[in-house]
Image (cartoon, rainbow, N blue to C red):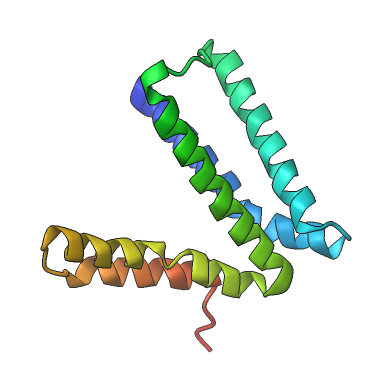
Length: 141
């Protein structure tokens, strides 16, 4: 398989499993779990998935020393996002958590326009709202 084909396959797999996180979390909570357990279980499953992918592709775990500060910062940010998102599903409906979580494309568009002095362009906003509608499963009735 070509590198592009492999990349697309990995992206598809990541999107599939990432999309399942919120709903599976709700099912775990309904079964009696708590946010801390779900977050740690997600960490363990993700770690096992990465280890499996590295074993299959014969990749390496090594991160260059100069990239460790950025890697740790990214890991801490990702932990905060995961804890907030999965914790929210414990207290509010999945659809509301998805709506709040998937507003990040809109936030990025606005920040990009403000920080880089760019004009806001309507098509990205329309695409972002369409994505939110798809995430929530709109009822056209």
